Image 1 (spheres, rainbow, N blue to C red):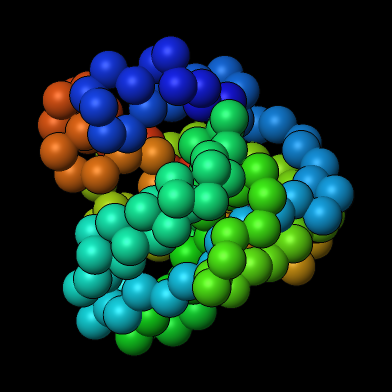
Image 2 (cartoon, rainbow, N blue to C red):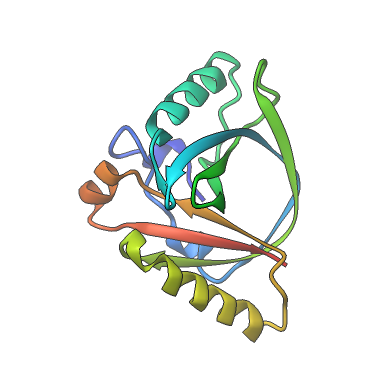
Length: 160
């Protein structure tokens, strides 16, 4: 997964694709700080401000996770819940524990192909004789880091 030693840009750590590509992972009460982002047709309007605020609270609480995982639950075209992995409770923040088994798949390309990526994920899960209960999206890089790395990775996690 991601660790601090691979933060080349000073922003988003480089994604270890092999750690996420077509894996089955298990979360047992994995702790996340939960927040909400406002969107218009799934295009986030305040993602940067939400992340800055949340990361400041996480750093103040010394709750940074060794794995830099940020999951998004695209609840509607008008907003998404964001889950940032943390090591311990963060004061004055909404906390959420996530448990379950997840199948993962990594996609590389523009966000405009998200519908295609979701279809591919659905096929992948079906090929494993599983059923999707919920999808989470892990956008590995911000636009600046995607440009710096020359890749735009999106990991889809399907709770099965």
